[in-house]
Image (cartoon, rainbow, N blue to C red; front, side, top):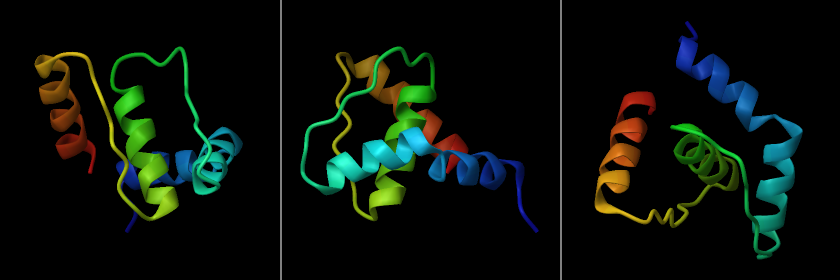
Length: 77
């Protein structure tokens, strides 16, 4: 049985923008995403890591942002 989280994650993993992002990283090229809001940046990084099959370094400016990112990952993983 597929959960709601799996459904939207599958949609993200097969979305053309994520494919382009993962392809760029897979070729060891730099890549960036602009305009993300809220939890979307953290979840996009997680989806990209899943797509690539290895961890990514996700950097935030402040410790409270790191705590929020961890909460997002634990909630949606």
